[in-house]
Length: 214
DNA sequence: AACGACTACAACCGCTCTGCC
DNA sequence: GGGCAGAGCGGTTGTAGTCGT
Image (cartoon, rainbow, N blue to C red):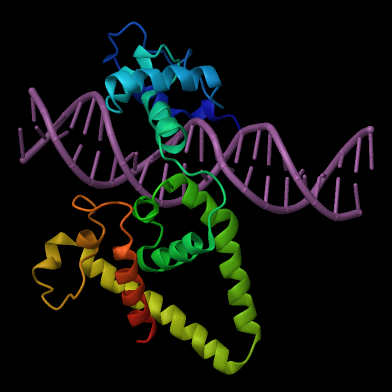
């Protein structure tokens, strides 16, 4: 499949806004794997201008890339303090628990795993964890009735969590829902927190255990 | 050695959200 | 309040690498 045949975003990026001469036109825009030279140029420009105004960055760096592509490359690959590969057992466990709580909100999950990107976690989930879970479900489905009851309990737990999250994440209803014991937005607000401080994790694990025992 | 199936992950796409004018 | 542009997110695709036959 050739992505260029339905490239709506590129069309949008080429609106007349572009008065800057270096911004690539639809025909010129480069796609596919990034070269080391492109990485170097992008990193240089970001070091000078900061990681904002991606369209300008793309133009300044002389890259025939759209701003979106530059942003993604920076966030997922070039950014400092990125951890690559080898997701530890602890991290995996955390991903599983957070996914149970949050669903496919990868950026929130990634926010709690220092050095990991949402894209990496999403990929890891799709290629590793989703299979693991499927296997587990199959196993539990084929085993004893007692175990299948446990499976129902697990599914029930997820439902409860999802309902809770719905209540918690909705700012409009937050005031009405005075019984909420937990606010997901507050919980995942890192603004006043050292990202490497793992105390939150203990709190989260305790809370998760609390749901488990429900 | 050659080939197809499978896996992992980088990158793209479309959509939504947010802030500014 | 409405429109626009930029930023961000999650889903999906493309492809290089690996493995089994």
